[in-house]
Every structure is written in structure tokens, then in C-alpha cells.
Image (cartoon, rainbow, N blue to C red; front, top):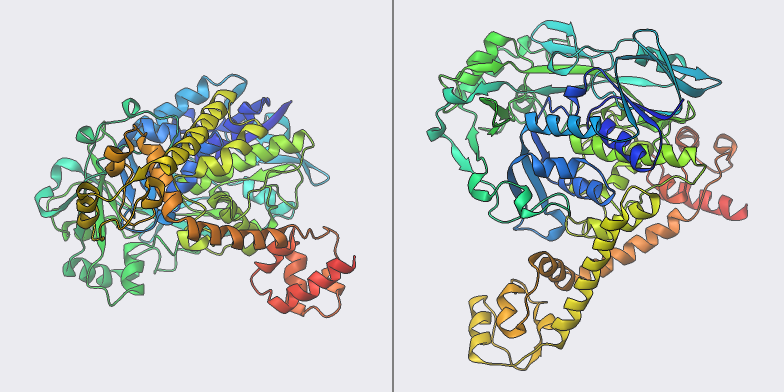
Length: 617
């Protein structure tokens, strides 16, 4: 008897089972092939807008993805640095081969974890409570909780042209019986679709026709524990390249739209709005003369380039024409043809904020099975599902992140409050408090919580406390440094477009000015300051007013979130509520008044009535 069984060793499954092991639970990981753990069948990268901050949050909660992403990165790039810190995001180009190897190595060496290399055929359910799983070989494995992280493997079909083939991604087997088992017990499923572009042999590309896209020449990492010596130096990092589609490319695609699986009627599932196929882009954005494509290396041990932005479900002969119409790819050799994949997902409206299913007790779901897209979204959900499965076993309250605490909290709240009809992707625009949810402060927001739960070590927590002491003492030191007017400081300020000092002021006060950096003030400070500490202080000082306003807005949200709604409320017979509101509230059964206010179709008058009703109770 296990405490937890995790089905699937993708990014969600890895974080789920590792969280359980850190919380001292007896765990089993069920996967078809351990060597495929952490596979990247799509884009070989980690991070990006919003997603990169999720990876930082995973790190603050003791997760594995940030550490392995750092160790196996081919390129580090900080995005959106010309904008405010609320949208800065780190992205790494990953070595997909080394990433899988490192994940498999760590999993196989984790104490207390048993890996079962077999497919999961169905769940063992008694009185709508999961008791374990039934493997494809007929063996029954029992546990207190089960976490499903099946990704795109449930009843999956590979689509290319007019051909549909039952298969999982990367020629892996698909599981046909599991989603039927879920439906049998009242869990709603629906079909979703995603896709991948062709992989091109590197030595067949003329890179002289492409724009070089280097990384960022500075030290950045997802994990606070990563040191500069742990990652590739900037000089040794790989470069990506940028090209654009050509008029001939568009002509070929339009001439063959009827051959695309997406437009031939073969595809039944809904695809991702924010990562569409190239044929979908041409139809939806017909006024665009060209589209960006990135040539990205997949691994140092592979001679393949990922053609980012060129996802398609065209037949192979049409793909050849399409690829050869692109600049620098006239003689390209396709190593692996693009395809679309359709699969079963569960309705996230049947999921509690704790990631537990509302219909089947002790069953948790995480990742693409919940209707999301992306490795980072999956890993964040897996981590939360693992934590909450352990807390459920220990009969402790669930760990639920609020929207002002983490992008992970935004994502889970969106899923279980609004649901999704297409593969959900995290965007900075989904977060109301993105200035509070920054790349730089993920540990300040979450690490203490992770330590208290048991997923962050004492040593890591003590290092965090030392860092916070250092930030505070450095700010106090900067406040004590008095900078007087003079030719040197005036020359520096003039170079930034400011007038010289009219009177003396503290270094901390001077930092409030745009473009003024701690490193530039060191001659006056006469103190060595760690670059990460300096960056943290600069953000806090320069954006203090905006941050305080965001905190005030968040406190208003917390007032709404503190108004707990009884789970047994009879919404269907609640006087004065509109019919649509009654139906939506009965379906989702929100945990708080705040969550109720975010349900699609619920308006302020409904909340006012609901608030009065709860107050009367």
C-alpha cells in the first residue's frame, strides 16, 4: 500500500512525486518508460513570459524543474528587460536529451520512490473514492491517493494530412481505457489538440540567411541554488536564429488548406489559441505579410533544429514544399515531420482548488490532463497536486495559493473557476497583480510557505533568511550614505539626462531616479554589494509606489477571499439570484466570495445578493 501513486512521468508527474518524497510519503511513479521522464516532444525550452516566473515559483517551493533546466540549458535569455520588472521573464533553450537523462537519474536515485514501468489501464474506485490503479498487465496497485498526470497520452491520436494514427507523442503508446474509466464514474472529458513543427537537419540549413539571436550576456538562473559555475558561460552557449515566412510559403499553404488535418474535418479537438499551427495563422491573420519563425537547437548530441512557429498537420509532401520555401531552408532535410495530436482531457471545473477531483475522492489531476498547455504550467500543477495529496493524507488543510501570491495560484484559480475550452496557457495579462508576482521575488513570496509545508529544506530556508537580512542591512547602509553635490555625481546624472544635485541626498533616495544603478554609485557607497541584492533593492525602491498600490488592491481581494461560502449552499433555490447565476454557482461551487466573483456569467448584483445571504447566515 502506497501513500501516493503518480501516473505519468512528464513535467507534472515528476514534480508531483518528488514533492511527495520530500514530504516523506511512500510513493510510486507509474510510467511506460523511465527514460522518457521529462520528455520535451514540443518546444525544447523552459520559461518565457509568465512561464519563467512559474519556474521561479516552483524553485521557491522546492521543485526540480528549475535546477535541471539550469544544469542542462544551451542558452539563457532574459526577456522584456526594456519593460517593467513585472513582465521580466527568463527563458532557457534546453538540451532535451540531457534534460531527460538528468530527470531519469534523479528519479531512480530518490529514496522512498518506486518506479513502475507499466501502463495504467484504469482506476480502482469504490463508492466514488479511488483506492489505487489497475495496470495494463492486470496487476492491481493500491494507495491512499492517486495523481493522474497523463499529459497527451489519454486516447491520443496523431494527425497528419488525411491520416489519423492511434499513438502518443514521439511514437509512444497511448492509453485508450483510462478516460473511459473516468467517464464511467462521472468525470467529464473533452478533446483537445496541440501540434509540433518539423525538425530539420542542422547541416542542411543556410544560416547566413537568418538573423542571429544570442542569449543574455549576464548570469541568470531559475534556481536560487544555481551558481555561475553550474551553467554554460555566455561564450559557450548556443545561438538561435530568426527567419520569416515567404510569400511562396503562404501560397503553398493556402493551396493545400484542404489537405491539413485541421481543415479537412479530421480534427475534432480544440487547438491552442496562443500557439496556433502555421495554417491557422494564415487563416486568422490573413492581413499579415509574414510570420516569425525561430531556428532552435534541440541538443548538443543531436543534429536537429526545431522550427519554432511552424507547427502544422499537413501531409509530408506538402511539408517538404512548405519548408523548402523558407529562407535558408531551400535545401533543408526534414529529420522528423510535423504532426498534430488530439487527446482526452478532464473538465477542470470538476476540480477543487486543491487539485482534487470533485467527483472521485482522493483523485488528483495535474498538467495537460486538466486542459493546460506547456511544460511549466504542468510542473506547477504537479507540484501543487503532490503537496495537497500529502496534506489530504495527513488530514491537514489544503495548500492553496492566492492570485496575488503566485502565477501558479492564478492558473489554478482560472482552471477551477472559469474552466477552459482550449489548451490553457499562462500569460502575464491573466494576472491582476503582476507587479507583485515578479521573477526576482518568487522566494520572498513562497519559500517560507514551502519550508513550513516540508518541501523546502532547513538549509535552503536558512540561506533565504540570510539573503533577506542582507537586503535589509544593505538598504539601511544605502540610507546612511550621504552623497553631496559635486562634479563627479553631476557628470553621472547628466549622462542619464538628469540635472545635477541641488542638495545632498542618501544613496537610497538617489536610487529612486530611473536608470540610476547601485553599481554606478559604488564609488560613493564604498561598499561591495552583491549584484542580485542590488537588483532586488533597485526594483523595490524604484517601484515602491506602484508596489504599494498593488498591495492595497490585493488586500481588497483578500477581504473577498476571507468570505467563505458553505459547500452545501442550495444555490438552485436561492431567492433573487438570476437563473444563470444559480446554475453556474451550483456547478462550480466556489470556495469563497472572491472565487464566485470571478466565475464567467456572474455579475456584481449576483455577488451583492450572495454576500447578503452569507452575512445573514
